[in-house]
Amino acid sequence: MRNTLKFVIGNWKMLSQQQHALLLARDLASYCKKQSHHSVRTVICPTFTQLVSVEKIISEMQIASDSLALGAQDCYPAKEGAFTGDVSATMLSDIGVRYVIIGHSERRQKHHESNEFICEKVKSALEAGLIPVICIGETLAERQEGKTAQILEEQILGSLPQNFSGIIAYEPVWAIGTGITPTMDELQENISIIRTLLEKHQPKTASQTPLLYGGSVKSDQSADIFSINGVDGVLVGGASLKADEFIKIIQSAPKD
Ligand code: PGA
Image (cartoon, rainbow, N blue to C red; front, side, top):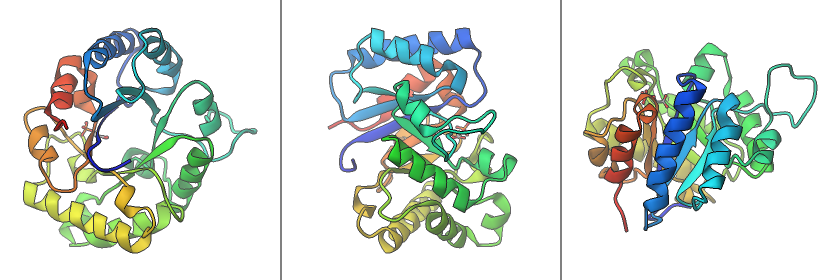
């Protein structure tokens, strides 16, 4: 999966009503349909209620799935059962979802999700044939205490099953939705730390694992982020809700 392929993933969170979601999906699908190269993969992750209608837009417009694909923002580990309010990876796969974000800090913090629980979700996503996008990253306090590498190692050890295959998104919690991004030097350092940790703990798959950056990504610095050695893409929240801004980010990804 790694090498020259770059990922631009939009996490729409709980920020978009249906009408806006459909317009956004149409605009992005029209743009991706015109793309002649396939070295950038765009993934959009609407909220659960919008997945079916966004999938319909992508399939009706006949967009190549290596150009634009559908992702979900979460899944539950069990395949089915009495889990009121939850959605399984199998159900997502059944409606044409191909990617799933797991372990976002908003779920780790607000839903108290542990590394162990996240690992169960990752396994269920893989079993269902989905590509998991696992978010890891330190809080501001952990960063200030010099614990970044330790936290990243704990999350990699706890959240990833053996021989993990999927995508890792490095999202420092203090950079999410704040407009603050790490300096390029800090980002380079932490990306290198994560790559080394993956080689240590996931030796069989590390070299194939795309590593993304997420946290206040905007079009005016996305080219710089892409230029960092070892960054294979970006996970974008707020800026993915505006078609023109998100398209500029897609355009800033290096092409073959
Ligand atoms: P942001 O969110 O781009 O709005 O900071 C990123 C994310 O939460 O994935």
